Length: 96
Image (tube, rainbow, N blue to C red; front, side, top):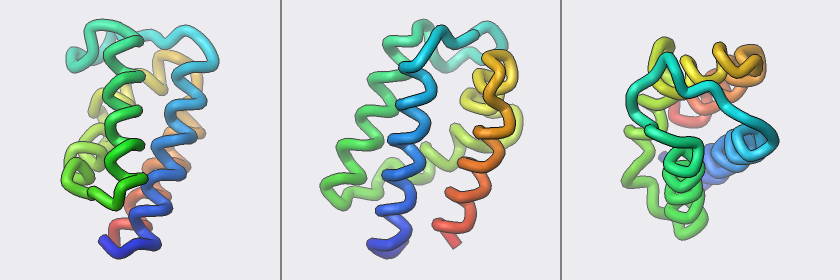
């Protein structure tokens, strides 16, 4: 991924962080995160790496945004599925 794609990925992660920190998240239908704190810490790690230009966890981020993956399940059960879909599509476009 080029620098422009990394910048776009960072914007997406920052948007995800804003959403998950804005209110309670329903983690019931996924098994990756035991708590909201764990979810926030993981997204913060993604953001910190991307800020440094480190895209090594980008495949993991892409996996988190796949249909039926953890962030998809959280978004649907927490009421922000349309925003999730927009962000997931943006990451796909940035990665191509």
